[in-house]
Length: 252
Image (cartoon, rainbow, N blue to C red):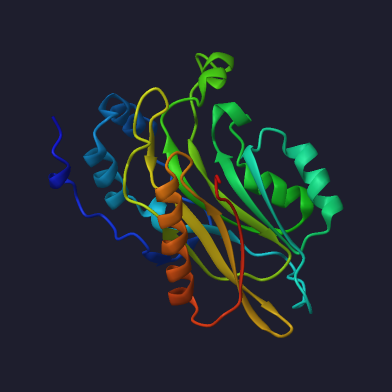
């Protein structure tokens, strides 16, 4: 039996990892195949996350051109639950005329959503920039229905995370760690990673504002409360005294 006391300390809850890239690194298929039989051992999750730059980077594409800083910010949040219908989603977002769209449960290279980079597809359709951070690497096809619908298929990438879309220039993109439990690395839907919050800074006419797209634990109320305490503390450390526009699926 696995001894939890032997788990690696791969990160501290509330850690803020600032860093961006043009494209997130891809975990090779052979690595994913080797990890699947190890589901159920949280130390595997710890070790994997500790070794992967994936969970400390934000994929960033600036808008071209960026809009000038607005007087006020029109902002919305949407948990898109994989973003399986990007064309219809883009139409609705376009009609909303948001300055910033904070998005949750966004797939990248998953069979259940057509293997698309769903955040990039929306950004291209709307002509905006984006930031995307992976919460988890999905080693399976998804929930019970998705496992039936996509039987025999395989994820080309398997990322699942949070995003934001905007016409404004983005500064200081970062990932905030909300937990280190590894509880999601279990059959029949094993995933490697941790709950996270994607943050970035935009400039308004009156000064900078922190944007945060959050996704809290869906199973345990006390963990959701801890998630919020962690997030509020981290946001103050990220930019002390700076106004925050927070959106998320808090699973309440």
